[in-house]
Length: 300
Image (tube, rainbow, N blue to C red; front, side):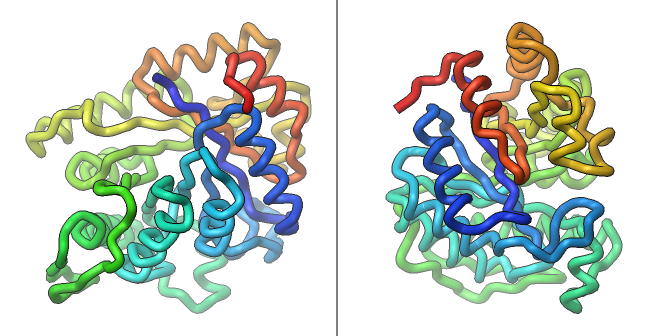
C-alpha cells in the first residue's frame, strides 16, 4: 500500500505555524511528515532563518499522534552518528514508536562554511555516510555496538533506553549510483530520492536492485520513496523554490486532478512505496487539501 507524506521545510516560518501545519497534514490523512536538516535556507536566498531539525523532529513527535515522524535527511557531517542515534531513540519514545531515522551525505556547502564545519570532497562524505549507517544500525538494533571505521569508532557502545520499535527504520537519501545506492543496499530499510522523473526513478531503482544482488539482499526489503513538488497553479514552483524552480520540474505534479493522479500512479508503478510532497513556506493548505481529495486519503 502506498504511503503519502509531506516533507515540510523549516525555513522562514515560526514554530506555531509549523505545528499547525503538521496538524493539518495529519487530519488530511497523510501517513508521514518529515523535516530537512539545514541551518540556512535550502535555496539561493542565503537566508539564515531556519529551525533546527532534531528539535523539530522531537516537537513533531509530541504534536502528532498518528503519522510517521521522519527526517529526509540528517547530514552526516553535522552530528556524530552515535549522538544522532541516541536522539532518535529518545524521539521514538516521545512519539510512541513512530520515529524514522534518515541519513545523507550533505550538500549545502554555505552552511558548513558559515558554521566552521569541515566540508570534505563528495567521496569522503559518502564514505562517512556508509560508516554512519553501520553505526546507527548497530546502536539501534543491538545491545552493544562496536565499530572501527576511518571516520567513526564505537567501543561496546549502548543506546539505552532502547527504541520503542524493535527495528526503528533507517533511511538513506540520495541518488548516487556508485556509493549511495550501495550503502542503501547494505544497511538501509528505506531509500529516498528527491525530484527525479518517474523514468529516472525506474532507472535508479534498477541500479539499487543490482547493488542488492551484490550484497545478497532481497531488494523488496527496502522501502522506496520519492520526493516530488506540487504545483497546481502556474508560478507555484517559483513561489516555493525561487531560482531553483527549474530543477524541480521533472518531479513536479502539475496540471489538473487527472494529470496529478496519473503521474503519481507512474511513480507507484515504478516501485515507489511512498510519495512525499516536498513543500516550503509559504505553505499552501488548500493545495494540500486538494491533493488529499484527489488521492482519496482518509481524513481524520
